[in-house]
Image (cartoon, rainbow, N blue to C red; front, side):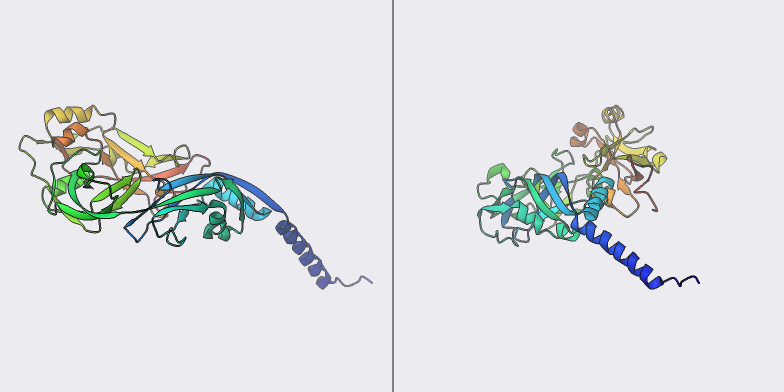
Length: 344
């Protein structure tokens, strides 16, 4: 007589086998070294303090060794390779008690181990270089700054602020020309300012990459265009595409509305400025930053009209249409997938 199959014992054996494999995976630790990560200073609500790493807004930490269960290490390695995991670390000086002027030591290893990102990954940080950093906290002084207008290339503009002065916190030794609050206007904003006031927040640059905006908004107006400018249409525009260093070499770009992007560009211009613009290597430029690789929305960005700076400064060339918005896809060069595209 054939014996009955004991399903209970079979299920128990399967359960114990799976349990052993899971236990073995958890018991077996692996390591993975990330070549470089960045720690940035988080924005502070106390505008009278300037927190930096020796006047830098961020610092690079190299050879960050992660350790943990083999399955978690494999998952992190895969996500780093396909770009779905981006490790970003921000130092909140207030939370670390760095609220008074001075220099503070930062234990990088402890900082990374305590970060929410590392904890959520279920891993630990074993080592990194450097393992110690210095954080500088400077007390700023409130001073009155003169508001001045500039274009996207830093050239002075014939535009004025209704509020000629704004109060801002700046280093105590700033004086003279340093006490300038800058307003940067795009070409479309300059054109708008000729008809109605444009609202902008002036800013200062404490150090390269360390921008601070004023608390108040100012009204910017620009003088009307001179009659010597005539309307012209530029055809056959050449498009230049720039990718951030992080995206360069990882993605190709497919512009979905290319005919609209390189179509006729309506400008008001002098004959000399028109010739100079037509001789530019690119008439329109599409700049793509890191944020677009992470976006879940259809990708689109307003074009930059690459007008010759000298003629912009002399008000001899302006855009006479609404800026075109490019719609595009980022196509991963490491696979045939299209990770970011319209409607995905």
